[in-house]
Amino acid sequence: MKLLILSFLIVLGFQSFGQEKFEREHKISIEEVPQQALKFINSPKLTNKIKWYREINSEYSTIEAKTEVNGIKYSIEFTLDGLIEDIEVEIKFNKLSEKTRQNIREVLDSTFIKHKIRKTQIQYVGEPKELKHFLEGTISADNLSVNYEVVLKAKDLVRWSLYEFLFSEEGSLLDKNRIVFRNTDNLKY
Image (cartoon, rainbow, N blue to C red; front, side, top):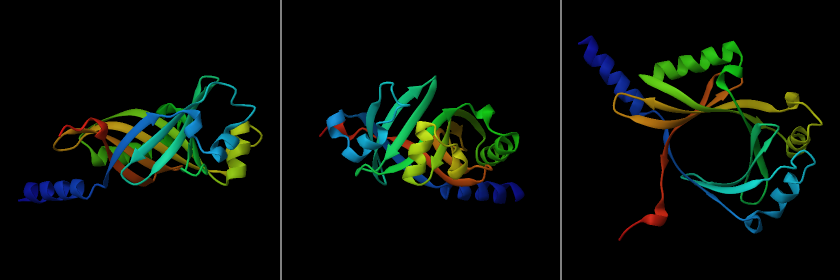
């Protein structure tokens, strides 16, 4: 009886797991980039090549500028109007503080049977002016909100799937989604 109740609670937990995030990303030309985003990105620090993408998901669309500076991968996300949303910097999971890693692992271990972290990013959120100065290297991240985005492959009771979790700086869960890739350009009728 206890096993039946436990199974029911686990299945209920997975059904209320969160949303599915349908995601599609494609490269765009510089002519398709909003002027405000181009103005923001013109920074002395970003002398490397910038690749522009449009990300379309089930909730909204964004424009992303991706580049690499001194071996560090940056993703700068904008609204379709060119307003800065956040700056994400790819890091290794083991570079997070021990306490943050422990809190994140506890959430993942209690949610999945197995999991493998594929990518970790620091997400900096703040006022556009402060994000610009941070990107230029003229201020530290002290005035910005810090979150961690963790992309992982995980197995629940049924299947392996790709997930995206958002954690606070301390490792508290803020959001979680199962990622489903959709390519609607190749529908056959």
